[in-house]
Amino acid sequence: MEDSISGIVLLISFSLLLGALVLAFYRLLKGPSINDRITAMDLIASVVMGFVLVYSVLINQSVYFDIPVIISLISFFGTVAVSTYLKHKNG
Image (cartoon, rainbow, N blue to C red; front, side, top):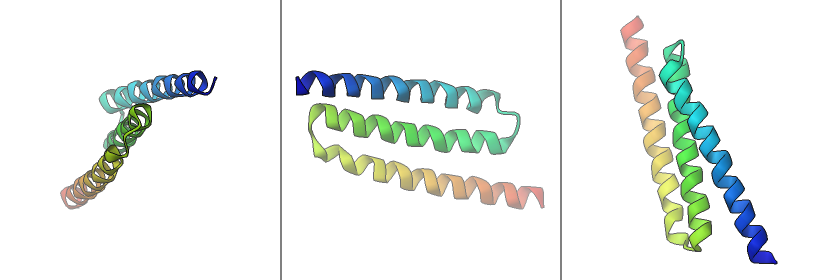
């Protein structure tokens, strides 16, 4: 009983994360401003972290818990770099 419920929860989690990824990717492509695109990139990084964590729970391996930390650091530095570039570009 417990395995089937956890399998359903993981399937629902993957489905919701996939929906969020599709919507964020759409906003990345069609965003009216650069701020929307930056936010969409951050959201995509967060959704990828969610995918990694749900997959780690699915295969019962804790070794993959370090990957979201690395992704979040790269995402943070990328956001700061793009924001600094836009600040200096616009004045």
